[in-house]
Image (cartoon, rainbow, N blue to C red; front, side):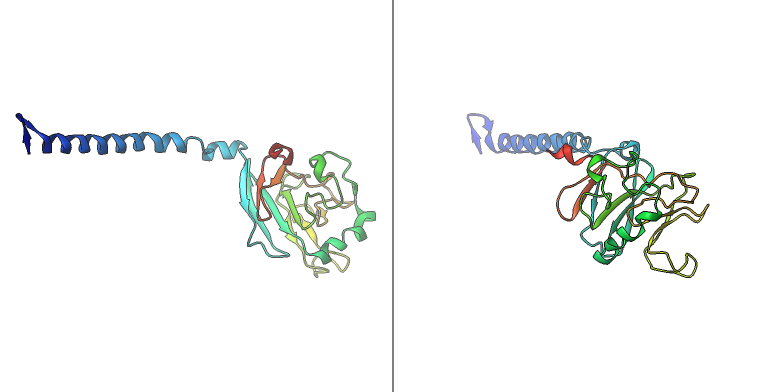
Length: 198
C-alpha cells in the first residue's frame, strides 16, 4: 500500500517492530531491577528475614531452616507435650526465662507466641553445638525421667520442650528464641519482630 510515495505497510511494520523491541528491552531492564528488591543469598546469610511455610508441619515434627548462618528449629508441639512443661520446672535453671534469651513476647513458659509453635536458634548455649530434638518420653539413652526436649550429645546439656536448660548441665542459658512473627496461620517470618507488622 502506498500513499503519495509513502509505503504505509512498511511504516506500520516498522512501528510494530519498534514497539515490540522497545517492550522487550524495557522488560529486560525491569526484571533485574525488580529482582533486586528481593534479599540476596548473601543478605539472607547476614540476617535478612526468612519466610517459612509451616502448613505441612505435623504435630511432633521439627523443621530446620537457616537464618544468619545458624540453624533455627521450628517445632509443632502436641498438647500432651505442652502439659509436661509444668512438671519439669523445678529441675530447670531459668524456668521463668528471666535471662534475655528471647524477645519479650516469648518470655513465658512456652517461650513462643503461639504455644503449639516453638521457634528456637538450634545452637547450644555451652559451646555452640547443635542440640538434637528428642521428643520421645523415657528413651533408654536419656533415662526414665526424660520427658522429651533437646539434648546436646557433645557435652550432655539438656533442654526441655521450650528450650529451657536443666540445672546441673554444662549449658548455662536457655536456647535463644529469634525474633519472629506470624504472617498467617501457616507462614511465619524469622528475623522480624511481631511489632514490625504493626
